[in-house]
Image 1 (cartoon, rainbow, N blue to C red):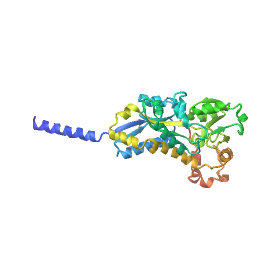
Image 2 (spheres, one colour):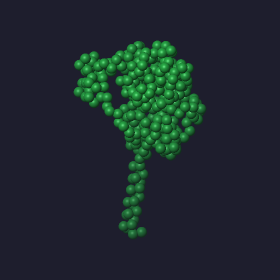
Image 3 (cartoon, one colour):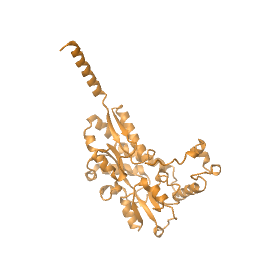
Image 4 (cartoon, one colour):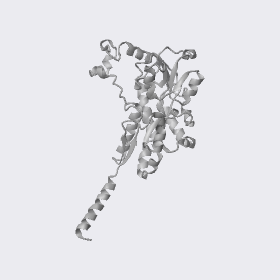
Length: 333
């Protein structure tokens, strides 16, 4: 071998070794919900932790929009359209049965406590995993206690539900509302605002944190709460199984270390818990009604009367002179 050829080969070997050392595993992350929602924030937090714990050797490419509709998310991850995402089990009725154990009424007022308990039980018994072929379960979790919201009238007894149409997210809530004789339609949470604003639905079943999260605070007029929640909703955070199996042992260890009840379910439920912590422990219906009255009289969508608002002193929009920027315009796809 000539000296020049030898030097070229050596340089190439060094470059290949350096390239291997700097190789980065990128996970494609998909979210069907807007970036500021607790679920999307938690997914980004998980990705940030992964990148930090691996000193940049692993990272996420968070797509600007979901690769599919919410009900199609599980299959999208299973087929490899995205490497990681999350979904609501109830969006595909009849497919996931065991997880409904976390959706029964009156389980409690803490989404964090329920989520951690749910994840521990589901991770222990193989029957849960058997219902999730093709994906690596990163965490099972729930949202906060379910509430009945509507635009028409106060609901104090079962008969008050008659004649009203409600959006539900699926799962055990279907059985609960069926028992109550409610007229319900299964729709994703992302459709709630348009369904209510257009009068297609009279109400929706949501946890308290979704009242403002899905921008229905300007539409809803009445809320009916229940100790421990009328229902709950189970979620899953997941990774494509083939993608996980192809990771190195060190990479798998990094993923596992920030998943399960050690982190992921706790992160998501803690965000919901933060929202819940700003709610009163008693008379939640009165509190919610007061917020709705405030939105209907003073804090209106256009020309809000900030001078008369009793909350102006603590309003960040008012203090930063950016009242006109809210609510932000909906981005049309």
